[in-house]
Length: 125
Image 1 (tube, rainbow, N blue to C red):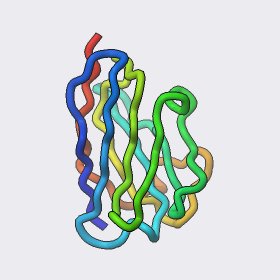
Image 2: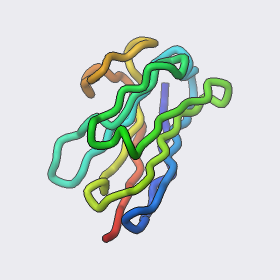
Image 3: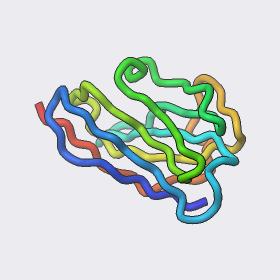
């Protein structure tokens, strides 16, 4: 499945952004989905994931109170609502399809088999 992430941009600290991930072919409903991010000079890190049904949504601890992952299987999309953004949230955000319909609590990037191209989020102080 080919994924396309969008919605990134420049926002001031404390602001919000909503990222979207759409599949250009294939159906996302077969997979759990996830969001990762990679800041300059840092490794890619897990942000959030969601099971195929929309239940079971693990988050990275530093983001669980500010970010919300959701999906619409009818529209074949997955979203990440980000609130109270901080400068340290600046990164390229990637969506990815997991290798199964259900995802565990702390999935690794290597467990995801399809990746979007990423969308840049810049949070200014």
